[in-house]
Amino acid sequence: MSVSLFDVKGKVALITGSTHGLGMAMSRGLGLAGATIIVNGNSSQEKIDAAVAEHQREGIKAVGYKFNVTDEAAVIEAIAKIEAEVGAIDILINNAGIIKRTPLLEMEVADFRDVIDIDLVSPFIVSKHVVKNMVKRKQGKVINICSMMSELGRDRVGAYAAAKGGLKMLTKNMATEWAKYNIQVNGLGPGYFATSQTEPIRVAGHPFNDFIVNRTPAAKWGDPNDLVGAAIFLSSKASDFVNGHVMYVDGGILATIGKPLNE
Ligand code: GCO
Ligand code: CA
View: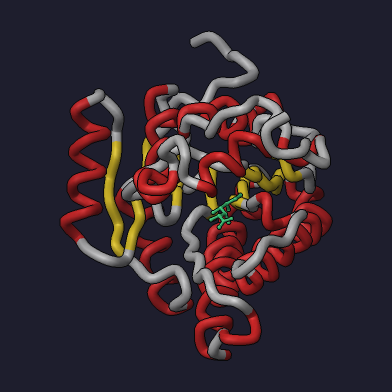
């Protein structure tokens, strides 16, 4: 077997919230590179089964587990099951997240808490219980899915920005505590991507589409497959001395202040 720096063959990767969108795209990329994919979701078993079937059609080894990442008891039970039935989790991608777009002055406290719970508390819960086992094996990779909102604000996404900014710092703290066990924790921060969720606002002439295209030096939305290279890097031996970074895959958004409209 060739030992490539970027090899993830035979590794078991748990990707939370991976039935669609960026989680699905990263799963597919790791799966095509030879990793065994654990698909997770909590809304419906059908969506999990459909994602698993789609992977299998492409020759990817994939298994689905439905559990709520904010429920610690459910997480503990699911991780024990996964490790008994599939194998030790080598790669954890904390991807599950939600966004609520409401101005802060109009936001209900319960809605703010929901966003923090799913986007910030759940990566702590899932990592805590996966990493306990990685510590025993003295090896592991954790990737926290951050956001442009780990660095920047935007109207109506206050709770999400608070959570994603917190997730960036949680990443640094996890890296600080766990690097000595040969566990590398890093963030991956997508810019604006063409997913089914952004489809309605990605049409030319739509103000948000024009804003994003104008704001992005690469002058386009990211293709979900653009995340795969960074995901493989952060999942493989190639990143064994890389700790506590957030790698932004954003077409250059964070590199620039932007330019005037129509220039
Ligand atoms: C928004 C978007 C963002 C993206 C993404 C950017 O309303 O500005 O939804 O928050 O979801 O996280 O990195
Ligand atoms: Ca193994």
